[in-house]
Amino acid sequence: MKKVISKSFWVDKDVEQLIGELLRYGVMIASIIVLLGGIICLYQQGQLTVPSRHTFTGEGASYTTVKGIINGVRNLNAPDIIQLGVLAVIATPILRIAFSLVAFVVEKDKLYVFITLLVLCVMLFSMFSGLKV
Image: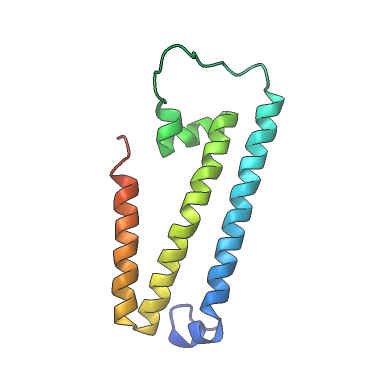
């Protein structure tokens, strides 16, 4: 078995093909999660609370924090399961960039390592700077 962190492994496996599979499976997993949340939402129809249309209270921690979403998924809360699917959709291209970064590091392509690292840092900063702690 070849080492995963070796240039020959990355040459033999077409990196673009691996990245394509990563995107395909990420979208499929996210779609399944959202579909499951939708089915549970239809099953729980009438049990969910209807939000007030007269006052805006904003979203609680269950929709704006990862911990809140995970807690909601444990309780089979349909909107939280759908929100988890949205998180999976958002995470897929970020994983693609991280995967590309590893491939460029192994290939020792410094220019693309710098560019990919910069893009990854900008995306992570923009995501985490808006989080409520």
